[in-house]
Image 1 (tube, one colour):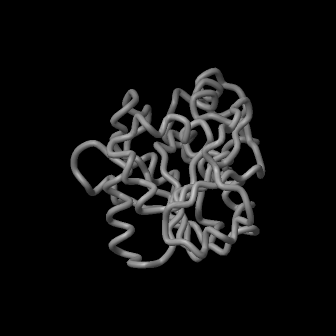
Image 2 (cartoon, helix red, strand yellow; image 1 turned 120 degrees about the vertical axis):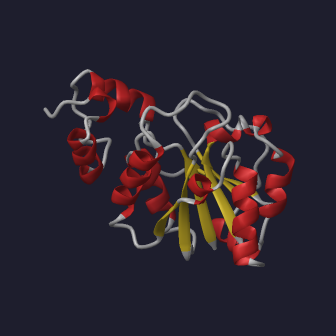
Length: 203
């Protein structure tokens, strides 16, 4: 099973990493691509540059052998649409099962995504529960190992580790001089301070 996690990672934080790391105990992933959304089409431009965000992502993933920073949306011109990334990964991995991992909040906004109808034709969807969000009846229930038996088409919910961190709140705390060491990996935090990102000053 190949996993895919997308995001602007502005900045990457433990909420992006720890639940997925815990998930690897339940699903036999061979590799998980963390795909940086370079130019998000549905929101304001990120605060940090593409290169800073990608460097922080690489730093955050150094300790996780299964996790790989993926820069394909940086190299591809134009808006960063998930469907184009999935097409590339499906071509790369042929008939192997692919699984897009996303939060329940993102899943409930899926119908606003470009060519969203095609996504479940290319991958399985594994939705992580999020504090304050309630699932509907869209999900197939059962053993998560079923994901490894289907190339695409399953939509499953995982009630695992919930970490109520958000990049928006972390940026606010950094700009206000508040501590974020519990939310942000140490190497990422050092990079933020060294490059004075998000208005941060070392505590």
